[in-house]
Length: 227
Image (cartoon, rainbow, N blue to C red):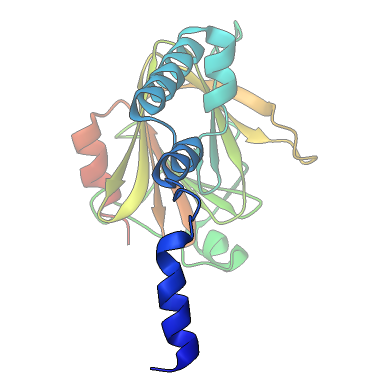
């Protein structure tokens, strides 16, 4: 040990150091400021749930929240009241053509159903192919880029689910409106008519729609037959 070390050790008992600062309270306060307390977090989530529930209970808010629900080319708009119109006949499905002409007019593979057999009528509207089955009173639509819209009221049930690994929507209950989106892309529908139960589903790039007086189970059985 050097003389300097010995002298410093000798002075140690006579040197008074300031008291050591307790940093724990300051650290806890800073952490608490960055992370919400559990009670406040629960309260915030509770208020959010209540706000959403109130929004869905108020008709205008409910319509605004759900109006964009859609699948592929299909768009479903929830409204509080449907327009007072009668069922349109004949349906606005496009030009009546042969099945062969329809197949040659679109770029996708047209799906047909062996279970339903040959359709009574085939219609073409832009790239939409429509089959009308008179014996079954069914209408089947398929397209890649022809957009259509549905307006449903409070008494119409809309259920979104997965069928065979793909998205699907089942619309049932009170009648709703079906129409094509205007050429300018506006959200209002053109050529509306009242429709029955409908199953909308995706098959690759195609959006398909089956309408008729059928149950959900029967509709699913029929749409699975389209190949």
